[in-house]
Amino acid sequence: MIKRDISDKIRQLSDKFPIVTVTGPRQSGKSTLLRNLFPDYRYVSLENPDMRSFASDDPNGFIKTFDNRVIIDEAERVPSLFSYLQTHIDDVNESGMYMLAGSRNFHLMAAIDQSLAGRTAVLKLLPFSRHELHEAGELPETINEQIFKGFYPRIYDKDIAPTDYYPSYIATYVERDVRAMLNIGDLGRFTRFIRLCAGRIGQLLNKSNLATEAGVTIPTVESWLSVLEASYILYRLEPNFNNYNKRIVKTPKLFFYDTGLACNLLGITSPEQLDTHFLRGGLFENMVINQFMKNSLNQGITPDLTFWRDSTGLEVDLIETNGLEQHGYEIKSGSTFSPSFFDGLKKWGDLSNTPESLRTVIYSGSNDLQTSNGNVIAFDTHF
Image (cartoon, rainbow, N blue to C red; front, top):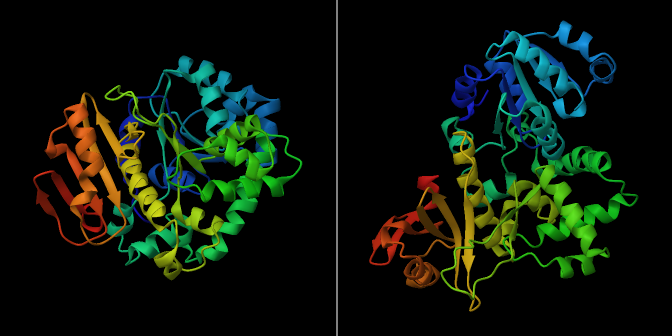
């Protein structure tokens, strides 16, 4: 089994809280990780109809049966159980009583906020990071292969071709979650909507345009985007709202939690096709931003990631905020450095009084450089 970087944080928090909740996309490895970290815990999945009925119809009996040191998978399937868990853990008052795993963020977090606030640590597990695959000797050799293959554990554990894995993933998980959250009669239209979103990776979100192409209303676009966010399919990268300049863009960008899934939605069937694909730069940017996100989440830190763009088109692809310090990154998929890569960073840095040492270009070349405008680092050697 490939070691997950979040493992130490889960163990640490299990000594502090009665419950540790691990959420994230379906098949990101949540239940596998918890069962390996806590082999002496009993395991119950509320995906099982009998167990789900037991927890729903007789919650007191369920708690008596599974009273301590239990992993509950797909916990959001029975949100009413959380109130009974609250009463039980308050009575027993021990650490590490339950490990919860869930895939639908909206339902899970709503249940936690209502019943378990302050009683559970919440961590998010995304698919493999590049570091995890590198340490295990499983990282694909080229950047194109990494973008195309994606990072879902099952692809690596079972050696499944991405062209076989992702269509099944979409049909089995995305559509099921959609049915559970929304009453959508035409799932084909919804799947087309997801593909349209994939075609907008790294671009400013234009809901009106998206609604027109998908043949739905703008409120429907917002509703469907919320479902895709709750299912960990895509996310919105928000603009940085610091008022350095009134002429800043205030519209978010769309990105996917996994580039392999996005490639499949785009109809890309081999890594070689990425060389000439119009979204190669956006997919590379997406993969880089995902690594920043995973690095923070695996330490139990909620990442504060934004971007900056002014009305003239100057842009900083990623701004990482730590406390009062901001670090700006320009992300380029090319392997040859150009001084023009710093144009957006220089404008933003001057407006925000960010020193050159906190302005960085990330590119797919092989050499790190120190310039008068900031740092240049090779993605492949730093992530």
